[in-house]
Image 1: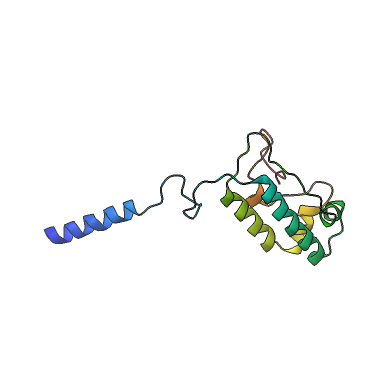
Image 2: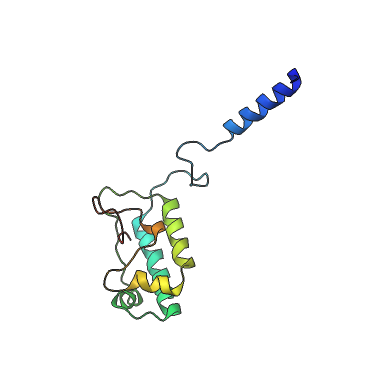
Length: 132
């Protein structure tokens, strides 16, 4: 291999290595790490719940609570610090969910939680079916 070809290959390899995302940047789309405001998040989630309950014709006590303006919560569990990006992904998942899935999220007994919204699973429970 000629020296100039070798240099081009070396430069290309270095460029690829240096262009990779930095640790902590993966999945955040380059956003700064900013803690999610629970009051804003739960207010937005409540609005989505309310509109999806209406759109999907879901009648549950949880849907009725959202129609009455009651929020699911106003703070995250202790030792849980989700980022703004986590909240954005969760809200997008809720908007994109089908009515069958949303009915599962809003049922009164044993509601499920989309994986994207399970950023604060309880310790020792494995996180299944828990979260905001």
